[in-house]
View 1: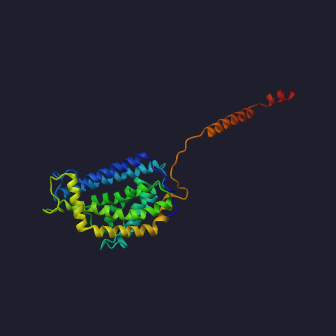
View 2: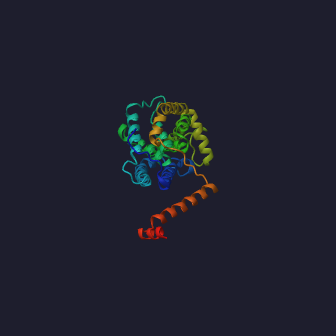
View 3: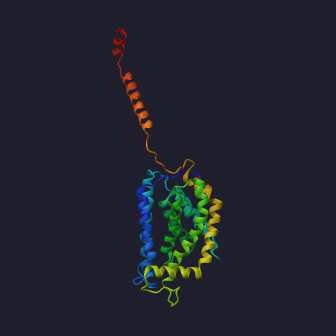
Length: 298
């Protein structure tokens, strides 16, 4: 992945849009948690999902525009995101069996967050989920929540944005295992609230948020945690193999964490002396030839 200018900063506007997009998506996906009484049933989800997906696509367009503007309106500002999304589409279409929890599609969104920050991770994850689904299968009412899950993986990688490249790569390997479990919990929310039952693993309307989360985790442990862990291990393996060169390409060879050092008294005195010297030099150059002759005669 060479040939583009790394996006070293995308501005506060892009970060704000990414936070709002992800928060809105989590509100939709986590509806059964924060409002277990009014959570939509299966028919409502099918009816509302296209509208939610349309809002997500519009939000992704706004996020891409904010990143482009924040990066100085360079034509290649979004080239890294485009390449990562295309790579994830290839991985999902050709190398993603999806059986026994083996999945390779979460590694690139995680690395996008670590290399480009929150905005890049959210945009890469959600766009990759959207585009690869269009290519690999028929979109369903679960697609908006899938976009949220993939974007959350990208946002998780963004916690490593300020860490030096090699250290970020090493930390991204265990973080990838956690990303597999996180995505599994979010994906379980898609259909779990539509299932009826009376055990402590089933969804029951009217319970407080803490009890709903406890039941969701029990359901995850009982049904999908093993597969989610395999997904995380697969993601960790791919990050271990590809993570360092991908991060270096995303960040560029000169990436350093941003640090600010207060000016010392010595530095301030040196700056004053340089300004005085500059003023004297400017005054010498400003002397006219006539003035120079008068100075020499005197």
